[in-house]
Length: 173
Image (cartoon, rainbow, N blue to C red; front, side, top):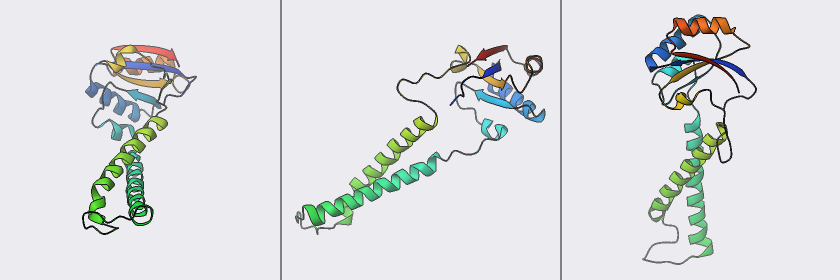
């Protein structure tokens, strides 16, 4: 989620290889990058930026385990206590009969839980309008943004010119 009340200086790049090269140069010069934006995921950008692996898969496992537990406990209670009917010659507690529903609830809980978690973490959802720096970032441009409190505008423009940025801009978000 983009922080509000920031003055950003940004440079637009035409190609993801130029973007990765510029990020490497910024890291070598110890420049504090506010954020990097791209129209699609860029392979190899996360390690260059020094980002950690997402822990969303851990949340997915927890949600899936919750779905499995819900299915088994729900069917156990229903078929042994609430509605104990022997049908088709099966015993009251028949684990093989529980497998399809258990699988479906595991997938359902994991998918819905991870989607909701992703939306909450990233500040997305109905009625939310996030600021954007430039219209073409979502189309065909790649962007590096610096906080103007951490780098002067002249230094940022010199960096963008040296790294091959096709356009430089500034925006208050």
